[in-house]
Length: 217
Image 1 (cartoon, rainbow, N blue to C red):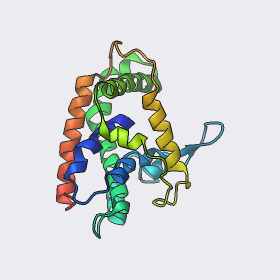
Image 2 (image 1 turned 30 degrees about the horizontal axis):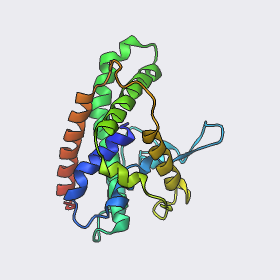
Image 3 (image 1 turned 60 degrees about the vertical axis):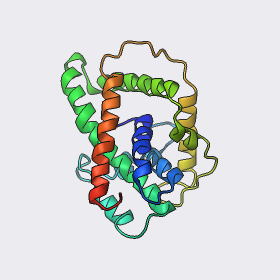
């Protein structure tokens, strides 16, 4: 799935096209599917990812994004609640596009180099993490600045999260991007900056088209 910074960048490219959107709620919605909380031993995610990312229970590869849209976004005017839900929906779309455009082709190209998929995933994630931090270093990114300054965001949106789940994730993500000591001048073997930039542009374009069809923009 796409990284948090990729989600922020896609949200940033869409937000100004949405009529009457609450930008803060929309931005937070774009990371909200990742607000599950791990058990103390780090083994159990509550709720599980198939719930937070709206996957079919019997076939977790099948997205229920349309069901999410119908439940939360299909009627009524844009307001703070719908702004949050719209961000959530955009996250779901971004992850689907990431899998199709980036992850699956990368897996098909490089999996032969590894004895299991988890090792490849770790290498892709390592490349993407540095690409994200490079973007953060090189850009005065107002969308992230707004996000990182949020002090309170109680969960009044989704009953499968705890009251503090979203606030806790805001703190975690803000700390992650503002505290980094890695080497950005490394070799990028599996994913590079140009691929990430191209993906963001394509995702923004395709998601805007989806929102136009659905009457959101």
